[in-house]
Image (cartoon, rainbow, N blue to C red; front, side):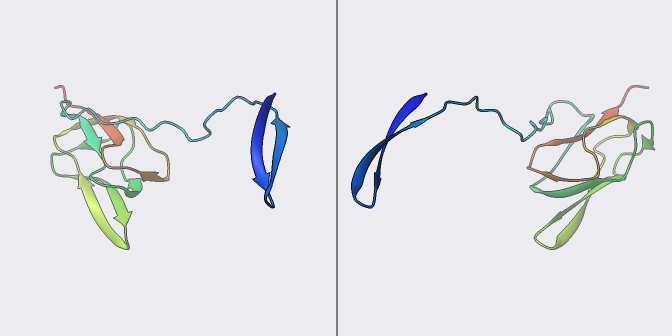
Length: 108
């Protein structure tokens, strides 16, 4: 329990409140590693839809996702060719700039 002082209608009051554990219900979003050529990041904040699936082969410059922000839609392209190793998002997801969208396996 914690005692808190407050003023209500000009009168000072003391109340006791129960301490509870603070936990976040918002999942942590993984950030893309700018040094990893296979990481595809969100260029800016918006609603992203990934248009490829794990195991798909993509070419450099090929569209892998779309992002919508402020009533504008833009394509997100693969920086390099490869196979989609992992998709970090499901469905339409709100992201921030730099969030990881997917990882490409560029070997071979």
